[in-house]
Image 1 (cartoon, one colour):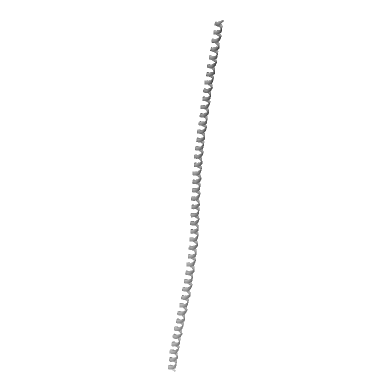
Image 2 (image 1 turned 90 degrees about the vertical axis):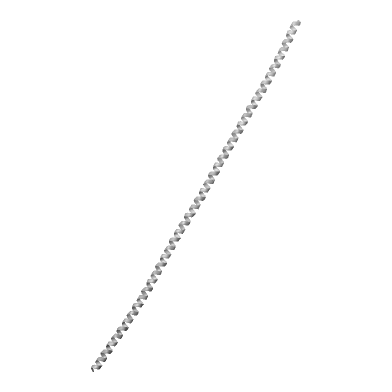
Length: 157
């Protein structure tokens, strides 16, 4: 009986060890399964964070690109406006130069016309004086002949 009890004890110990090994194996499998699940969750979380970071970077890049595009557009518009302003200034200065030229030409033309009018007036006055002198001379000659005739008549009488 002792042998039976010892055999049963051995058998019970073997079963206990077997149960212990199975429990350890199950615990190991459960731990590996939990580790795999945790690794999978960690990997999924890392992927989600990487996607969020990538999306955030893409949004920031898009905003920066838009800012650069708007800045470039504003600079181009400012450049065009400066060019237009410079062109308008050149045109204004050209109009002023042209107006000064025209005013100078008009002043010279008026001066020339005034000079010609004065010369014409001087010529006419000189002509009138000459005619007046000729007429005065002719009157003197007529008067001298008349006097000479009167004297001649007075002597004859």
